[in-house]
Image (cartoon, rainbow, N blue to C red; front, side, top):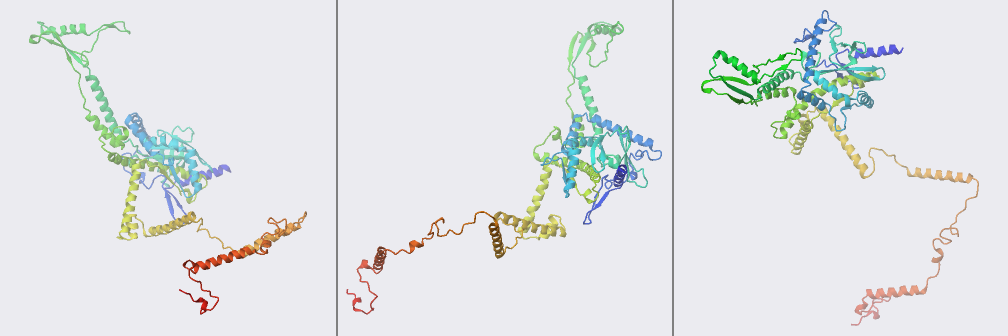
Length: 591
């Protein structure tokens, strides 16, 4: 039963990856298409007319085995050249820089950013890439082989309900991609591995992750290496460097000119005479270890040896002169080929240590941005095949609906200048939009449509989101200032009902206390000795005592003093006694 379930599972994976693209529909009817083999980018291989058309035939085609073997032999020759080029310090450094820049970590320390609205999918993919495949360590070497050969093959070990549990790289020398062998399904792809340690030989599309740098149809169904355009220039540069070294080694030594006076010797005897002189001066006899004989041979034509010239007449007289070596310092031809090499690698000279005529940061920044675009193209190829690996893993985990493709993988762009240019562009757009609104020149709809390229529906959606942001801002302010959350609806409290509930609870507590046994509770202690304030807590006894006369007299004297002050006793005027009538004779004031 388990074997039958396994066959059903792998059959489903085979069907899934035997089509052009993977299509899934979400709950809103929105379709998402994943082109795992990048069929939408390139046309059908059979319709191409390139230099490899007659060689791109598989073993499954009639009488195509010889052509396929010839094509594989051509690929292997390219790979041998790539391996030889990897020994060149400039090209090796360029390959390292490609890998370093394509696998840069972001500000959070992640090589690969995984985004998905489904938290379960995100956790599964993080476990796959960081714990199982260990891309933090392995992705660098994968990328270097990809840019070196143009292809990189990864064999996936898959288990039902567990997903991918292991991955093993496969040499590009031993694997072949087979397409177009099934007339009923042109998109069906298989891989054939020679000298397979597992003795399986053929693998389905979902079992092999084929990373390839596509862009040139001449190399389909495989990728084109980043150093392919450099191959011819590298050979020329190698030959030129070797010629320069040989030329300098051979011409650099200093030579001597021996002028031998031959006197009146006849011309026929001059050669014999010169040979005697040379033999005496240059030839040293030695014993040949193999034969035991004397060996006196010497190559007089060797250009590294000295010159012997016979002279007579006015130039007579034996003499020795020195001939200086060749002083050759011109390297324009080498520099010309090096410039072509750098142009084909697309790596700035400053990155390789050949910084020339860079007067400011602007030049280096411009080169950095162009190089960042090259790295971004390599990263897109990596992201596409990593997405295929993720789909295989999620499908094996039992996720086959829209969530199987509802994720996004993103590698970090290495250029901070490239990111800064994007930020500066958005800053300028925001500033321009603010100026237009402040001057009341144009409407907001124009700003949304022309500056930010938003449709009418998208701009309306943004307006609704802005209102929600303002609501959240008001909510945060209320929470920070008053401690109340306006989003939380508090229930109205009925005070009378609460009091009634409290009284009911107190009554229940008292009844429970009465029912309990033990010493009875004491009664009220008010106006008793046990009360904390004694028998007279509010001083009733003190207030009932009769007031003293002295206090009344003091108050009366105080009132008289106030009346005298108000009526002007200080000015010696008589106070009118209002107890009698106003017209009384005693009220007449004498001047």
